[in-house]
Image (cartoon, rainbow, N blue to C red; front, side, top):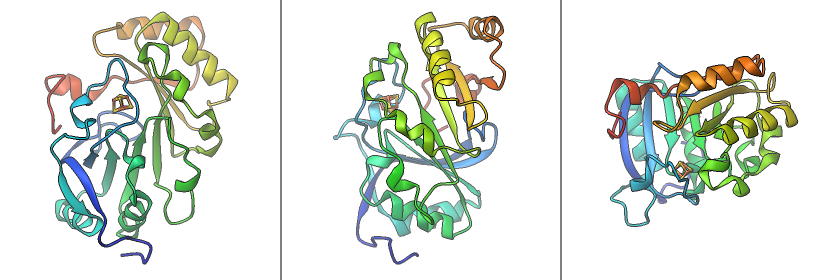
Length: 229
Ligand code: SF4
């Protein structure tokens, strides 16, 4: 364990399981998921709202216990998710400890947490999958656009789109911040709110080279609201 890891601090873990990664740069690959309780946003379409309440059931685990669980699975990709994992005190120490074990760490973050303090050597995850919340989420005013500058080729930005207004806004953000070539760029439909083929049409209309349509694999493979997958 790196010396920076707090050995006493406990993290509220709502779920831990092995599955395939349903989205982002590692879609389709095995990963160990650690889902932390709590989120500072309230997106209109949130599919993990049950994990956001302060009262949600959670195991309290130390960094050491989380590392032991991850190692026991034999899976090399780890995805820290939520909720919003970066709100948890000590999370940088946990990413450092997981990396020191030779694991490849992904953090799924909601775009409303400044990433600078998590970009220091030894702590930075191998991959940030960062959301940019579009108008239909109701949370766009919380986005920290300065985070874009901290992303690189191993990271990605995910635009979850539920309307024409969302698609137009995603296009605007991608162009304004020069995201193509900087990091991966994904557009995903809000499940049940917009047809994926409409997103394809939009991409064709605007010749969106370098952008990926992504359907959340876990919602196709299992029932859309199933947990632990
Ligand atoms: S950021 Fe994610 S976990 Fe938080 S409310 Fe929005 S969709 Fe739900």
